Image (cartoon, rainbow, N blue to C red; front, side, top):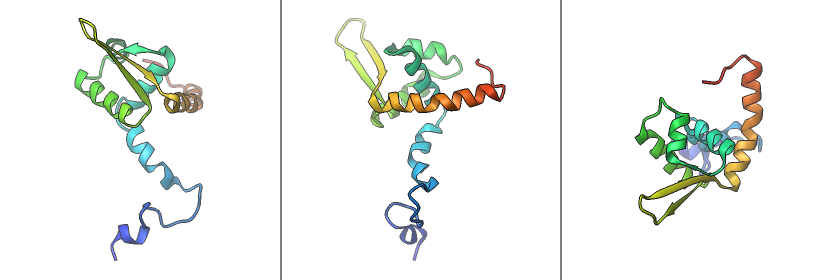
Length: 120
């Protein structure tokens, strides 16, 4: 019997409801480069355009930011609104779930500050 069969469909052999395995899927997304940065930028600024996000993350490539935003939209954490204008205008804002995530990240940011982390 293979490992996936032993773990069952959900991928966890334990029956502990507080099992860290429950974080595997969210952390796979949140652990990607710039994902939490994007969530924090949008959480702090509300509705933002791509260029505003890009300005806050100067080390990130345009293609990486675009990919991360697409992933966040697909995950239901960010909402994307495209306006039929010339030039095209696209705005991003956190969904309800994204807002909750932003709120839950605040203690982590506070912890990092307490440990001496500095903002870029």
